[in-house]
Image 1 (cartoon, chains in turn yellow, cyan):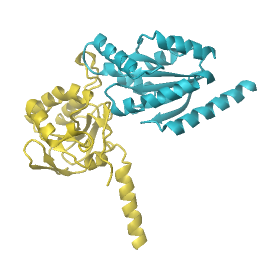
Image 2 (cartoon, one colour; image 1 turned 180 degrees about the vertical axis):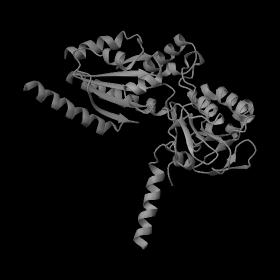
Image 3 (tube, one colour; image 1 turned 30 degrees about the horizontal axis):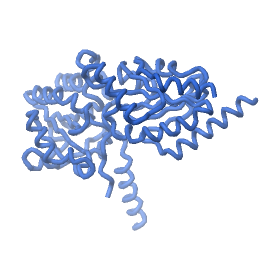
Image 4 (tube, chains in turn red, orange; image 1 turned 90 degrees about the vertical axis):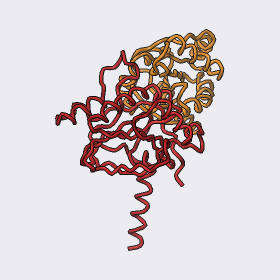
Length: 197
Length: 164
């Protein structure tokens, strides 16, 4: 029995270390993380009935910054329609001080984030979602199921956009329609994971 | 040897040519190159920048064996003035003394990811033969020793193939 438990523990550890990008149709992991803006704990309980967007982003990545205004606009627009956005910074702030909670607070305040900006201090939530880059998006329906994953849009340049992945997914879900493209390739800066303890 | 001479000249006077698709990248190689290494990177990608000196050393060491490296900068993915951004990349390459050729990708990043069948994470380094057939890929930062050994193996295989 002890050996079996050990095997399960090892599998769980390996799973955390080499997590695959969460598949569309998978159950989304919940979390309770500190909002860098006010120091309060924000809890996401998948299956809470709310359509939610989990955005892995950060302070230092130029590609994430290029999408920042777009995400803020979408967050503001869709909040009016009952969609909850959670921005999460999973980068190792011990290795990169620009990712500290103080820097996050400054960034969120300057850009008037209409959603919490949460510190994933040990990168555990990013690993659980299998997030690879910033920005990396996961749309979770009210039942807690991942319905879209990937990029915000297929280009950071508005004039070159052909597919607005996040927007289209939210419009489809809010309109009770099938999402045409449920998985796209998130492009951006690789997440600077905190080394596993 | 001819390839090494070509590359030395190219490195001295290298402007940063623009390419629009994965096939353009493959077409940018010299015809003499028997093993073709494509490294996809950007100046804003910390791990890409970190591995570049090692790639440069390997590239320089293996030129004589018919191996050519081409870096594909994805800096254009960020909105901004293209000319300024290209200058930034050129300055970066000069400042880091990178000797292998680079191209500036102005197409859609997703199309490149689809063409080279990667998930969008950079750096990625792909190795092709002269016919454009993929021989090997390294996703993420290279382990310089392992990568060099892999290329050495490919060089040896290529020589054996030539003798037959």
